[in-house]
Image (cartoon, rainbow, N blue to C red; front, top):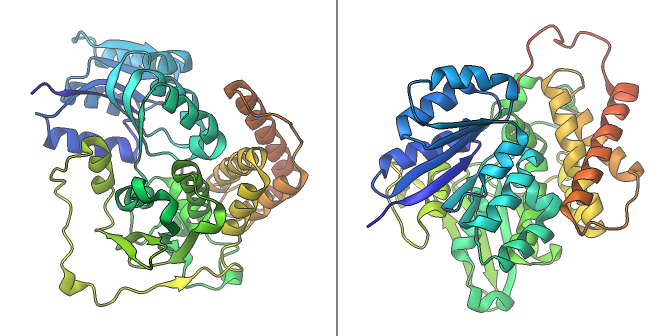
Length: 401
């Protein structure tokens, strides 16, 4: 049987690295064609050599010479620049793993959807900001879209397409992050180190902060709305500290289906790569005997106001979804650079939703990118004028990005 060709957008990030670990485990099934990275030339070169990639693309053009030198004794095709990264997705592939963090993954994903048989989406931001266009494009090109987020991958496995109209609700679980047992007043000035120390999952800095604010789960609510075409009143969230149950799907007959698994991203990653088949991940396997301590509780809106902002953005429409996502990305980066307090992240997002400039139509990718840029500029100005801290707050320390 011939191997499946694979492009990985963002191979040097957390999901990208775990994807390559699984590819190595199943080297008889997958063949790496293209690997892309933002700026980590050394790791990208190492990955390309290990996995015999045919092409590498680094978005940061300043790193091109370094990458070329590292791969000088190979015949690997080496490209650099944002446009090269996007255009690389014009090469057909069986599977594209979309693992570029944040809104930056939007344009490459749109290109991939037009040429790949399957696109596995690990970054929720493109679905939040432009999901209506992305899903329509995938439908027109008959491209499979599979979610890699553990919760959405769980719903995907539980969702009976023939009974889609019989779904009463889906429930996404949230660990609650590092601050789930702390009072709202106690986390306003939480440090960067505290915010990125997720108790259950191994993730990058940005998504770890989003988990600490619960913005991540709120964006997942919007993602679920896009992926499964469900109204917001059918999408619920509960705190589940153990991260063992990833999602529930409730049907109108009273049946509640649950997806359980160890909190290990290798499981949803490999499912998205091998569906409808299954394969070994080397991840821990749950023993039912150990499941006596599972607990669930409702989300405290005072402790996690970000979740309410996401439901609000979903009600208001595409413009608010774009604005919330953009404002959050800018605010989180400012926090990671120690320029604002942790508590300011959600406050900034709320201000942007209240004061954002208006726009009527979001029926093209160009219009979405333009509006996203205007919101980022608006948010940055707001931070500099009202939120940026003048005092130390560890500003002399290195930022975490």
